[in-house]
Image (cartoon, rainbow, N blue to C red; front, side, top):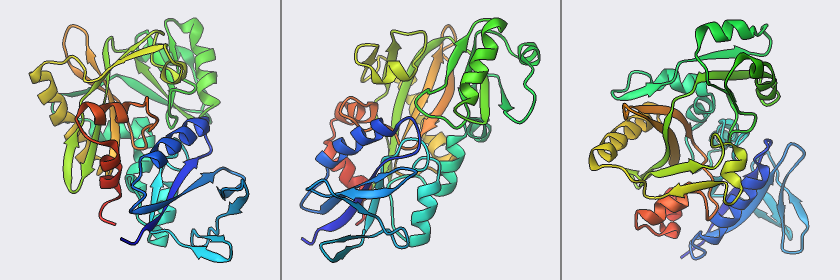
Length: 327
């Protein structure tokens, strides 16, 4: 069998650079070496490089996305994007690879761009049977932000989050108007658009959904029990701060409803590859509230998708291999 050259893209321009590096290391350990020769490409604002066995940085030729190693030109048959945040999750890398004709593992450029914008995503999925979204307003940095106007339209507690951010960086929960200005400022440091959303009390879950070999598969859900007031960046990436249960304790009826809703969200957004959808089951009603969809979810050993793949009785090596199919 002839091995194919696979570019594994990691890093990016956001605060999730180091998480992306860890995801790439885990993926590289679980790619079939009999089928693919993996080159990890580090992407930053300053440079795109491959680091060889001797620690030497080899620049990527962005004209055709190639490397030259020991006088030999290396072209790639596939790009495995594991950049969390920009430019790997928001459609920029996807558009670049589309122009070069190089296939990749994620949603296309349009879907990636839309799903990075929480407000636009909510607007598209609105109307799916059984799916609810919290009342919210979108604010822009170039407009004057009136805290009193926010309070007049929404009820506390409120979540303030960057509209295009990931991993809860810049996100806050506020209980009264006194905490609003600082929370708005923190979110605007991450993005020029922010979302102010009413808090929905209930159990928080995350669930993977993937198209494998042309078949849509919903993975077992994970319940997230955070040791903090909400599942923020520290709770996601600090050991012991949150507790995750996979598969989640849900009834058969709840699981059926969840599978139907997340499948419809995936199809309506025209997703490809693997995505992870976060939601809340509201206390008292059991209603399904959409939080967001992540199109390049974390891939460390402790990340939710690998947990769910294992809970589904699947082999992670075969899982990644199917994402690269049909090379």
